[in-house]
Image (tube, rainbow, N blue to C red; front, side, top):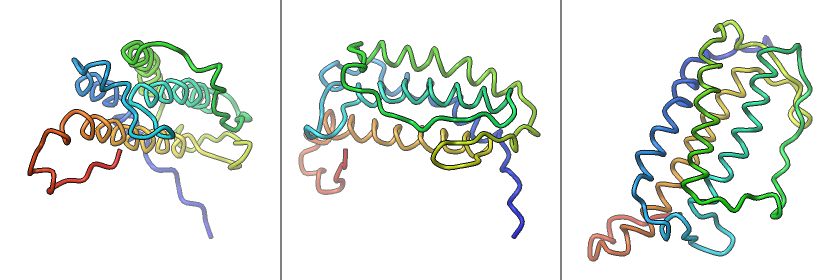
Length: 173
């Protein structure tokens, strides 16, 4: 079986460009109490999701740049930061950091040719991965956490006050 040619990279880059705009618009003016609310002890708050997005942005930004500029670089497996390594920044500061990391990454990615989609790196756990696959995974990751943030916001700030309309929705933060 012949391997599939890499998917075009414009669609994931377009989504990556939109994510900071969506987050800034969605979270503008949201009270800190909503940003820190956790639906359960083992679940994340919006602030914690933003912290995770910063960590992943640093990791994937470095991986994507290396795949685009190096020949088959070795890519380490993701290791979640220890509790002591997690910043104690506000949710707003975390969002600002994410935006500050994402915008130059999108500029860089927009500058590379479409033919770079097939460039590869060697992931410690997954084996050979293409630039296209990594971009599609990051876009997929963004959408998953945008949904998560929206559900957290919905479940805490709006659903409890919807009265009889609650029967029409069941948030799952």
